[in-house]
Amino acid sequence: MSLSILLYNAQVDWVTLTSYDSSWWRRWRQRIANAYNASIPRKIMQYDGLFCGTPDGSIFLGAGSQSGTDHYMMRVSGSIADDISSMWIPEVGRDECKASRIDIQMTIQEPEDWSQYDLFRRLRDKPFTIGWMASAGERVDELATVYIGSRNSERMTRCYEKETVGGNKLLRIETEYKGKRAAMIASRIAKGGGQAVNFLQYEIQHIIKDSALLAAFTPYFYGQPETVYVTDKTDKERQQAWLLNQVLPTFKRHISDHDSDGIVAHMFYKALATLDMGVIMSVGHSVNLEDNGGQ
Image (tube, rainbow, N blue to C red; front, side, top):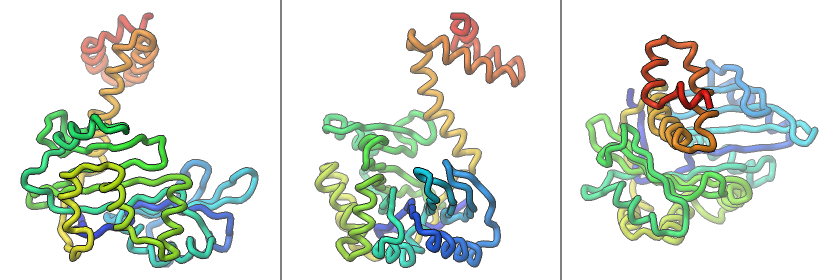
């Protein structure tokens, strides 16, 4: 499967908007009903609503309760968030809603001499949290993501690789803002106090402070947008990558932790009990499930 990506253009890639205004919620419900025929019911956190998914992103709009008061939430991901920004940005400016999360990204052709692993190594001595994940295993030459900052903070940046239909690599940098910082940035954009590119440039130049990363993206901060097509994983492939690259390493760490290995292993053993016995014995042997489960 392939999808279009706009190169050399900083844009909003995710926005979560919240409001206590029921008229705001009804207006967006009507917009979604007019734009999408295949909306499906879904619940996210305390919000019941409608979800619409497309190859270019998704929209969820739901109603719930906040401190005993009716509260509404809209979450838009992918290029749709930028495509419909002309509608939601003025609403932020009029205080009809506020942003609780906003992601800003920019994608370029990966420089010929670029190395994600070198970026990871350079940033390890910086005074912030650094993470690494390879999308197809643990080899450093595979598509990889470098995480800069903590998921629990109000800002976290991801620098990751994507692959075009023709096999060429793209490099994307994306900063995720949450809480008060997200609200401030969305409000400044809405009131003409900055563009998406300004905030991304600030992250690279003043927060991350990596000269090679700055050199790679600076020539394109105000460049001419260009559309390319990239390969995209299926939902099953994404789930497999998540299990192999995030769940399994975490499981291994708990197995080697004497304070929790018995509990974790026993829970996994019970979950696997619904599967084929050969699978259970194979997994059990590789991590010594039977011994740990009895602790």
